[in-house]
Image 1 (cartoon, protein in one colour):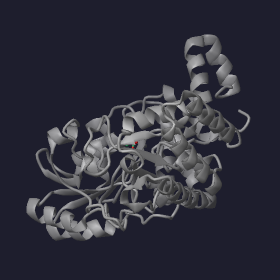
Image 2 (cartoon, helix red, strand yellow):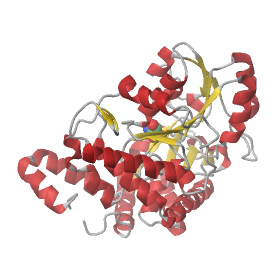
Image 3 (tube, helix red, strand yellow):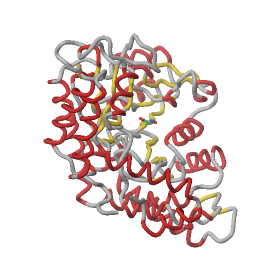
Length: 427
Ligand code: DSN
């Protein structure tokens, strides 16, 4: 199989070593289940735009204000991307240059606050992101992060929600300059309005990191933070189903600060081939069918969650409102770690990631949880019946993890299932 017939042949002739690896990765993606919550399958149009001569162009600056000549065409590409993104989210200003979500977040901090200022963000071990002040991340070295977390788990499944009382208490005590709403491993809806009230009470700015739910917001199935948060950052490659990259939305009043923070503050030349691919993805997300896609992502996640629950896994936060299903493995098997589970699932062709669960007794490298997500499998056309099957394949693999033949049998079933749900058709 090949990624793209003519481009494939050119690459194969020029660099068989890399070409072979691209083929192998294509095969892996087509024959295994992609359940990493932050991944998706872009359309062939997005793939095509990504591999264009736009990669050749230097265009430091912004449309109409570049530091290099020859940007007449590039300016139009970037303007279209910005306009489509503003239309998609009803935003006043868009910056489509962030190379990644981490860059978008860094730029937002640089634009909104000064080094040393206090930021209130979600605890990493409760679902926050590295750029929300991890000790290992540059954000914690430049700004002073304080955190909030989830309510305790309970038997009714109504716990493990963002503890808004704690957010308010911490905000009143710490007087942050900025509050960050948003998470990387949280399966419930986050409403910017709840955070806005607290931000206003303490005079803080509000940033919403929508990296995970961006596509759900664009598709109208999650509440939009645009017009509520001062700045909204996100990645374009998760639920939004665009190329790998980031973007920022903000108000007209903050536009210049955000733009300056990205360039020249943080980045040099933008990746205009990626920006073209973002524009294509934004056009796709503007189609009515994208609403159906967003709704299907959530519907699939709910079925996957309830089916995994029926297999004996404890659902963190009692279930899901979005594309993420976070399971606590300890009820399924107290000896099973996230690391071991991820590794054996990989052998069975089920791709997911281990994840800490709230107050995890194990280290972040080992963990007691697994995170699953439905954006990619929903793109392939899978629905409720397939989600039930996937949950059963996951449970079977983990139950028989020391039996190589049983794992191989699951691997064969996975390949059979995937063969009916090919995102790139007969490519
Ligand atoms: N690595 C992303 C995720 O998987 O959620 C966040 O940056």
